[in-house]
Structures are given as structure tokens and as C-alpha cells.
Length: 378
Ligand code: PMP
Image 1 (tube, rainbow, N blue to C red):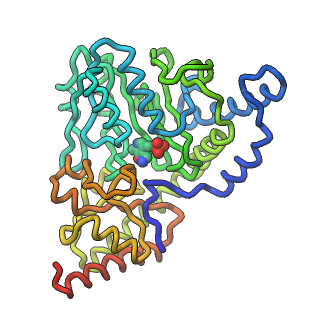
Image 2 (tube, rainbow, N blue to C red; image 1 turned 135 degrees about the vertical axis):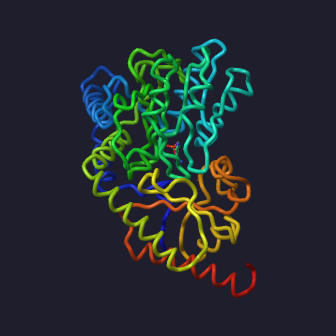
């Protein structure tokens, strides 16, 4: 079988798993004042420093979370709660953890919202952002690499628009980490979310970058862990895993992304040669190395995903976050229309894949297409 759904999640790296297991000797509660607690605290803080340095941040600017969903909620809800009648700007193509959170706050009357559109290239327009800004705008939340199309938003242009406005910029960088260099100062980001399980680290661990000096209302209250921004005993072992995953990303970035790019190109070449009709969703020249989303006008996504699954090819209809259902992608719908959203599939690659894997995916697609064609179903 071939797993080609690395944007949904990645397998944990064995070395990372072993390091996590061997770090179990640091079992003390970092808040305890005895030696065992202090040892655990020092170990935890070493990892926080490493996580911070991976994105050009200071250690106190990193809040360890249970993943990017929590990090996104923390930034959005925390900023909305700290302001009177806040206005938030986001996009129609965000991950559910951003979009649903903002929609819910809007329904509850806790903020007003402007949703920026994306065109057929998958890009939002900095001009549209500019005209959406008001004197009530407190937060702009934009995904850096879209998890369904892989399209990379024009962060420098976005930054330019925001340079003379006090609104904070929150960036969901979950799909960017591991596939491009990220520096929060270079990109002038105020909040950034990242997740461990997309970069061969453990599931259930992530971080929110929180620029120094910005008041953020805490979602969880209790102890004063994470400088009172997230109460609860620290997850020492998984944080070690996240930290090591980021180190490995930094050490292997060029090599990994080059391999992903080669695999993606080979896939498109093979598929074109096989004469299976398809179109790329979004601008292929503005994409991260690991994702491609294709429109297959001849069959519904759900049918194709099932047929691929039976052939041992594991791809995705878009976001895996809707509990096992195949819903037409809201991202493809925003860029194109309902029809296209219901006939599109995401393939996401990894440096762990081989050229044979790619050939098998293309061959399976060809086989499914031919079968449908010959039985006059298309
Ligand atoms: N944002 C994006 C862009 C994602 O792809 C994901 C994972 N599907 C998340 C947020 C949520 O991350 P986590 O699984 O760590 O909660």
C-alpha cells in the first residue's frame, strides 16, 4: 500500500520515539521545589529554548500546547476576549480550528468578522485585506501554507498592508513548518501556531508563539505554568519530541523539500502521461513542496477515495478533521465552486516515499479511470 496523506499526519520518527522514552527519567513536576522537580524543569526549559530558536523566537514567547488546534483557539479567543467589540479578519480557506472558532465567536456576538476570499490561484488579496481593516480590527488570522491546496500566502505583502495598522497577525504555520524556513521576526508575526505530528513528532503536542508584550487572555486557569497563559502540568516527554522534530526539520530541510518536490513533479508527469484527465487546484508555482490538490472532473471525490483505498492508496478529500466523512472541501469551493469541490483530492508527499510509490499511485488512478471508462460509467 501507499500512504500519500502526510499533510493529515506523519508517522513518528523512531529516533524521536526512543528519545521520548529515554527522557522518562525526567518525571518530576516542574513546579516542585525539590531537586527532582528542578531537574524536570531544566529539561523542559531546554526544549522550550530549542523550539523557540527553530522559529527565531525567545523562549518566553513559546507556549506549549496540546497541538495547533489549541494554539489557534488560544490566540483567537485570547485576543477576542481581551478587547471590546473586536473585529477579526480571516480567510474563507482556513483550517476548521481557525474558521469554526471565529464563526462561533461571531455567532455568540463576541466579535465581528470579515472573511477574505481566495481566487483560483488559491491566494488571498492584500488589497482586499487593506480595505477590510477598520479601527476595530484587533486580529488578522491567515494560514501560511494551506493544508488542502499547499498554496503559500504572500506574507511579505500582507505584512506591508499591516505595517501601519495596530492589528495583530496570527499565522497558522502548521503545514509550513518542515517545508520552508520560518522566522517570526522576518515575517513580523505576532502569533504563530505549529504542531508536532505533521513533522514526524508525536501527536497531541504543539506550540503557540506569542510575541512579547502582547496581552493575551488565558483560556485555562489554575496553576501559573506557562507564565499563567496555560495552566496544567507540563508535558515534558512530548515537548522533548516536538523539540527534536524541529531540530531534525532544521537539519534536513533542503534535502526533505527537494525530495518532496521531485516526487510531486514525478507524480504530475506520470499522471499526464497516463492520460487520466485532471487539473491542478491552485497555482502550482505558489505551492509548498509536499501538497498537491487535483480536480478529477470524471468522478466524485468520495468514489475515487474509496476506489483508491481499495487499491491500497491512501489519499484525502481535503482536511481529515471532519471525523471520517468526505465533505466537499470548503477551500476548493471558495476558490472555484461546489462541483469542483466535490471532485477533488489531495495528495501529500514525504521524503520517506519512493519513486515506485508515486508510480503505483498514478497506475492506480489510471486503472480506476479505465475501469469506469470501459464500463461506460463516464
Ligand atoms: N491548522 C492546519 C493548517 C492543519 O493542517 C492542522 C492539522 N490538520 C491543524 C491546524 C490542527 O493541528 P492539530 O492536529 O495539531 O490540532
